[in-house]
Image 1: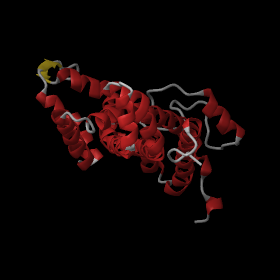
Image 2: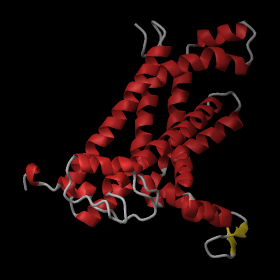
Image 3: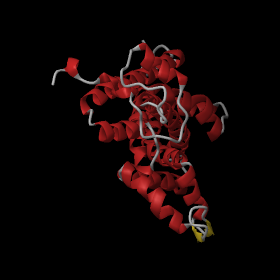
Length: 280
């Protein structure tokens, strides 16, 4: 089948979602392209609207997960380089566990295993007191929250490795100079070590930001209705695999390149000549 003969108006067909109201922007787009399959009398919104909703969900879950990963990963990277061995052991143990278990397995752990380890509370689903009832309520009502939490913890282990490597690349001379100036350990990290470390490893942090966005597609396993979930449902309902993939591919490329340009702009803004990847 040639590309020109594909049924592009399928995006303006009625979806199988009845939980949201129809959006004017999607109807306007369908009218503008003269879609023969669009019907203003349809009960459900179009697939175009649902895909747009999925993109927004994908973006905010990825951003939220990245902030969790960045701050937790930074904390772990710091404690793993401290002379305090118990703290370093905690950080190393966390990284080894979360980095070596696949994300999909971790999602299922937080969804089905972890709540069984919690005290019994009331479950709104069954109306009974069950183990981890409040956690199960959260999973049923707001699965994206659990998904963001799991994705953030998973990525934090990877970010921690980059931060640790960046801290270890700071020269001993700079560390000794901070001590000679009377800086405490916290002050040395804040004013000397971390500014250098972040500038050094920022390109690898950029890669992790893009990975978080791409990995957010897996959250559909927890019934998070993101872009991937809607494209999967649409493929099953319409059997229009080719045009759906033709649309979804540039969507991912546009967002990942946007992330790349934003992170590159940040790298340029904090670059110091002669220092790190941004130096000359």
